Length: 628
Image (cartoon, rainbow, N blue to C red):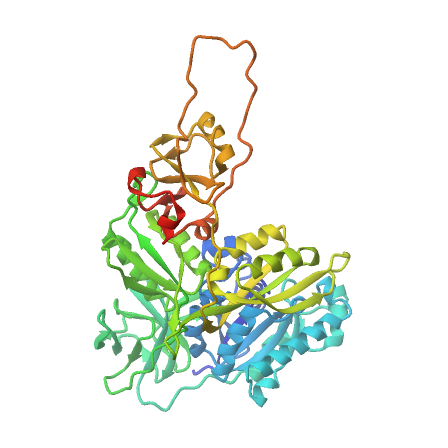
C-alpha cells in the first residue's frame, strides 16, 4: 500500500530547542515502546554534539501520524556546518522554522531560512520557549513574530511563503498551540497540551511528497554512512520511480580525477527510516527517503539511476570555503608517545575520507608531501574535525588558520565579511565594542533588550560587521570579557576590498632551549618574563613554546633548571614560593594565539605549541624575521 509522505526539515539557531522538540515529537507519535528508556536529545548521537550542546551532522528520523509518514531531518544551527544544511534542503518539501520567543531570529536562523525559501519550500513558524519569563504577557512574543515577518520579507519570500502558519510551543514541556490566548493556561498547567496542533499543521501546510515524470529510478545522494556488515550506505530521496532489493543500478558520479563515471552495481540492501531505526525493506516507494547499500565508491552528490538512459542530476553545490588550514604529520621529539604517530599516507586518507563525507570541506595538496591543506567555513568546523581525529587516537600538527581571498573584477583583493550578532549584559557593551573596533569592526545596530524576569540587569544586542580575519579567536576573548554571559554568532554576508592589517599578537614566545621535564624552580625564574602555559613536571623539548613573552621578540629559556644542592645550611628557613598563575591553552585559544612560524601539536592527551624550526641556532627570535 502506498503511504502519503511528508518530507520536512527543522531549522533553527543554536540552542533554540530544535533537538528537544524532535524528542517530544518522537515520543508523542508513539515511536518508542511503552517501557523503552529514552535519553534526552536523542538525535544528538555524536559525543561531541552532546558535550557542546549543538547539532553538527544532519540526521534522519521518521514518525507516523494517522496514515501519513513524516520524514524529519534535524539540521545543524551553526553557520560553520552550513554544508550539512545545503545538501539536505533538496530532500524535503517544507520546513519547521524554530525561533526562540525571547531571543528572536538570529544569524543562523537567517542563514538556513534563506536556503529553504530559495528552494521554494513552505515554512511553518514555531515560536518556542513561550514560557520564558521575558515572554510573560505576550509583548515580547509579538515583537519576535513581527521581526520574523520582516525577516521573511528581507529574504524575498513569495506571497504564499509569507502566509506562514504560526505555532506557539514549549518544547521542554511537550506542548504547543495555534491559539495565542491559550498560552497562559498551558503555562499554568490548568489546561493539558500536546504537540497535536503541530502535527495537524504539518499535514495541512506541508505539501505531500511527489515524484517527477522522469521514467525509471532516480535518486540524488545527500548523505553517507557506513556499516561494518554491508559497507558504505548512501542516503537520499527517491525523485522518480521505485526501488526493490536486488535491482540493477548505476552510480553516475566522478572519479578521483574529476571525470564522469557510470558504474553499475546491485542494490544489496535497502532501508527506510522508522523512528530512529533504519529498517530493512524489500521495496521503497517514490518520494520516500531511503538508504542503499551495494556500492563502496558512492559519494555525496552522485546520482543513482535505474538505467544509463536516465539523466544525471546537478551535483550539490555549497558556498565556497572562507578559511584554510594546513594539517601536517607530527615531527616533534614526543611523536608517538601519546597516540598513533601516523605517516603522511594515513593522514591523507583520513582527511580525504572527511572531505568525501562533508561537501563543505575541500582538500588540497601542498608542495610538501607530509602537509595537506583543508578548506572550510570556520574555526568551529575545524575544531570539531580536530577533536574527532584526537579521539580516534591520531597525532598530527596544524598551522594557523588562513583567510581565503578572492580577486575582484579590477584585480583587487577581496576578503570575506561577516556579521556578528552579540547578545550581552549592557555593562560590557563598551568594552566589547572597543575590542571589535580594533579588529576593523563597524557597529551596525545597537538594540536594548528587555531585562530578564526578576532581574534589573539590562541586556543589549549588537550587530557588528567585520572581516573574517578579525573574528579568528574572538569567541574565547568575547566570553572572557562578558564573564561567560554573552551569546555570540556570525555568518558570512559578502566580500569586500581588503580592509588593511589587523593586529594579531604583539608579544613573542617563551621557547624551551632543551629537552626534559619542567621544574618549579626553573619556572619561578621565568615568571617575570611573561605568562606560562603549564606548571612543573611537564615533558618539553627544544623549540616547544612554554609561555608568552612580555616583549615583542621570542626568548629561548631553560624551564628545566633545578636548584643546585650544597652542604651549606642557610641561616634562615626558605620561604615557600609557588607559581602565581598558569594560562590554560585550549585548542581554540591556541588557534588564536599562534603565528605563521608555529605549529599546534595535537595528540589524544595534549595540545602543545611549537616552533616550525626546533633548533634555536637555526631560527631568529626577532618578530620581523619570523613573520615577514
